[in-house]
Length: 505
Length: 104
Image 1 (cartoon, rainbow over the protein chains, first blue to last red):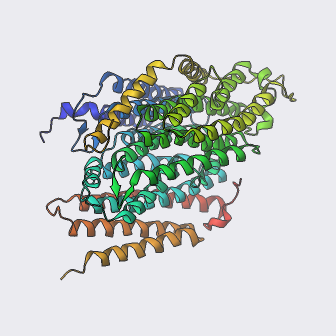
Image 2: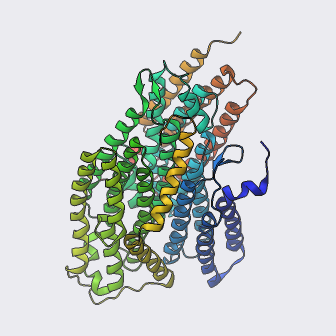
């Protein structure tokens, strides 16, 4: 294979840019003094926002999509997830800039950039080695970020829980990878799929299933699906709020992209091993996990007192909704992949919006308790309105983007003959609506002693609110362009699987 | 003469199980970290054994995978130990059961 640097560059352009940005931020952290240090956050924000344009400028070419020795894939699916991760990083920089604690901490932005680099690579990985490196490049910086307040007991405690669960989960997943390598003698995902499809594994159903379950455990941890969710509430509560915001969107988006790639490429439809359709097993796993995640997340969220903990359980439930779309992959419709991509795209903005408001509120009041949100509509009407839009979007109420997102997911489920799963999703959305509305009621109706104390919002905070609120509303009103792009990503994913003739699409 | 592949896989599976048991049962955070390392070493034995017995002998992919696992395990251990030191500084204990401020 002829290697041409310039031809291969577009495939990792955002990652390459992030690396340069990381070095720039490191240098600025070293040289800037005093008030000028505020600029580090803006450099990070504008740098990552500009890099989010590169996947749009360098559209992938049709045909061969593997670059860098088969390590990364350059297709629309990777592109759309890279844009999500980069925008998530950029907005996180704004959230951090609006807090006194992080505004001037150069290393904070550096670590966010490195973690985003890993998440970008995750969505593009085409090789087991790359998958593992990308996962760890995302996770290890996040362990550090969660413990960023190293004198704070809660921060350090949540970091330890995150680290111990996380390293355990990645060791389990890696054990699964070692079996996949053993079966096929190669680490390239599409070559593994070709080996599976060739019938060489025909008598070895049990080992394949063991590998599949081990790998699913690892992914389940990353996307915080029940029963691998134990770390989520503790980490979301204990971590500094900007970090929580980043964890809840960036690493989740990357992991879902990888999960879909794995399921479609490595265990595609139509592969029969030992007389059994392999996909039936993973569809079963995903459906079970989706149902439990939605139910457990929503039910436990009902009784929460801490807003970040409430949002943690809500994000477990949201992972369950997205898993509905992943389960719909069994029908191999473009709708399934596209609905997952679209949901995560709008979830990125919505969740950053909600966590951003929490960060701004905590910044001026020092409280994370839901009851203390009382009177927010009088203390800062815009903040309360933004929070309302974010919560309604999470609940799936039009015109916010969450409604369209859920609509696409449930539509994908119905197209895949999983009507009952869509029904479970709808019932859960009703339960979820209750606790979102309770927060809105507290903000608007409840009185507090501090009603006359306005909450000030800094400039980066206002920028963050403007961007996320606009994006949440626009995605809800005009979903077309992003959804079309997501459909392109879907067909790119299925083309790879179709190349082995295992899939009729 | 080299023992057959299944022996290597059995050793790796035993090591992995011991590691997994350690993670779930040990109380000391450092011991939990050591158990995770055991699991990663089980992965390495698997990778190298599969590489040695695989049909694609000229390829070094299994070895390089194992090398990457080693390097990343080292990075992970460095961060993990730093976190455990931070825990010790805030509470004078590295026992996992003592670290219980966040619940439900």
